[in-house]
View (cartoon, helix red, strand yellow):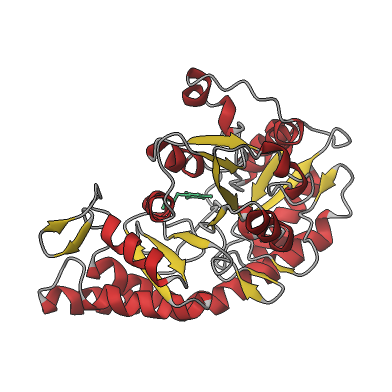
Length: 367
Ligand SMILES: Cc1ncc(COP(=O)(O)O)c(C=O)c1O
């Protein structure tokens, strides 16, 4: 296969002189590990989400693990979650000695189906961990109701959903929010993550867990970790926060452009936006149905030949991953199993130009 000279990538983080100068200032300050710049980033991120506290850590995975620990999830507990996510969502539950219990997803939003959560509740259930997949908020009215009626902690994996809103309220403010700043995400710090909450006690516990369970210098109350973010990383985060509004608007505009064209191509289903949501399009994910000329994988190959890189998020439900099969999972959740066969994500990031969008649409029409 000949690879075209020009390739449209799935992600292309915006990094420029702002980030370079901010990193240089931190290096000149001599404070490299967690210091005042992390504190500043936490304050600004808490404001963005509309919560009182934000606790920065060194990855989205660390954010999930720390949030679960801060919520009191421990050995023997069950946590209800989605199988249609990146594996970190479920692994963080396993790190706590708890068991992920999978509930199937809604076929149009790809998010956990709230009507299936209640059936999964047992006396061991301690929390519900939802994922705002691709940047679209879950049904938070229904989910917060289920959690409060059953005395369950709500944790939001918002790793793909910076600035996403449900009924005008930012995700990450309904329960304990967890965000990732990996380079493909809507904003980046290289590697990084953050937990958001308005509960002062939970925030204090999370701060302690990210730093070896320390309550004061060299006094360790519980088994914690070194999940701290560095000031170098936080300096990048502060620069990225200045761009997140515009970057989000570009993603949404790009998505609208694609949807207008794709809804006219038989066999392709553009992403559905459920009512009262602001979808921030971390991924623009379409379904390739049986009515389309080609299989999903054949379409992926054809687009690659034209210079359009696409992604499959995710090729397996988590319970079918070898790790989970070895742990005895034998779930069969039909909506997730259909989604893994049909989904294809197209480039939608802010640096995809109008010319690129036209090229993508033309590429889809051609095949
Ligand atoms: C839904 C979801 N959860 C968790 C993570 C883990 O974040 P990180 O890669 O920063 O550890 C990611 C990112 O890849 C993600 O997309």
